[in-house]
Image (cartoon, rainbow, N blue to C red; front, top):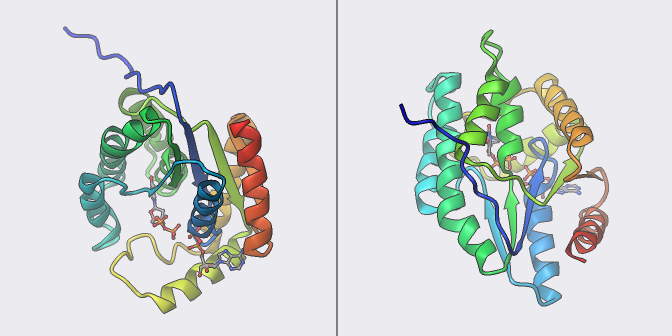
Length: 223
Ligand code: ADP
Ligand code: TYD
């Protein structure tokens, strides 16, 4: 029988940065500001997001974010997010890193570790499933993960006000409630304590102040 081995998706050039945090923490805002600042300094930057970031993964995005909340079992959901990530990595991230670009992704595998790993308690060890699939199918971590940290209430109120201004079809993960967001925040912070690739950024300041911190942290890594 053929032995299945973890894939080797390491990269040799470029810099791979992810932004993580609970909904409404300011990831998308900061990803945009960081991309602009780095471009202004002469870096070639690819700004991307998950779920999505490649044509195939954007199709999977619709499957996972639209429709009924109970549309997918927790296990199927893990497979869909991982399938989207694999396509994103093959078609978008790896080619950009091979060109030497700075890749900034708004969410990556830590989101699956938190959202699918701890969200739905079914008795099954979903976190172990996420980690196992990650090892087999993704096999790469960002060089730097910027955790935009915010308390659950602030994140929730920002996400709600944004949702009111652009009500869309992506409702499966909306209204998670602040108790779940607080657990997620704690989960992200615990991960950050374990993994040296993390930098925790205080997101409860003005966008410009957060952006200055994000840029300084990134420039230290680039140097
Ligand atoms: P995320 O991508 O983490 O969900 P966004 O960047 O989309 O977060 O921000 C969520 C909402 O909060 C948006 O309406 C955005 O304009 C606003 N916002 C972002 N950063 C800040 C900040 N530092 N202070 C106040 N509001 C912010
Ligand atoms: P996103 O568009 O980043 O939403 P937001 O701006 O509100 O943070 O992501 C959409 C939702 O998808 C978000 O609630 C988190 C969820 N998600 C997962 O559950 N697992 C994943 O692996 C990823 C990447 C996102």
